[in-house]
Image (cartoon, rainbow, N blue to C red; front, side, top):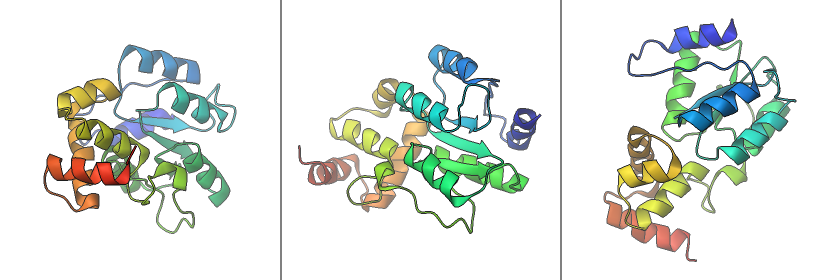
Length: 192
């Protein structure tokens, strides 16, 4: 019922394709068959074992951003989900407008938590300057190797549109306007 409600709330954008899975095993099967731009993951889904399922899925599919959906709304659960690699935390009690807001933010490479949630995104989700998400760091590293969006999308198993969104966010966050400027900045941020 929750999956159906989430899909219906996001149907306003006809360009999106939705695949539903009722267990962690089914999620693995879907992600193995076809790359996804985003995974909405219920903490109480069969096979999740609390947030352990999130941790396993992040290890197996590190390039897929995860938006946790949960009836649990305490700051500790939210913080722990972000520490384990979630890109956002959406309470089941959130209004329909928040669903679209959360999905769009995460697809653009942002960390999303509901307004008024008193938890900061973890340091493990950002690089040393605290601005870029892990996925944005991966995109920036490949960009600095001279790879084009299509190649980055292939390497990270995401769509080219998602790469473009990440590149836009990277440019904005780094205050650059070209790929060359971003590559120079990447060398300063990641000197190895």
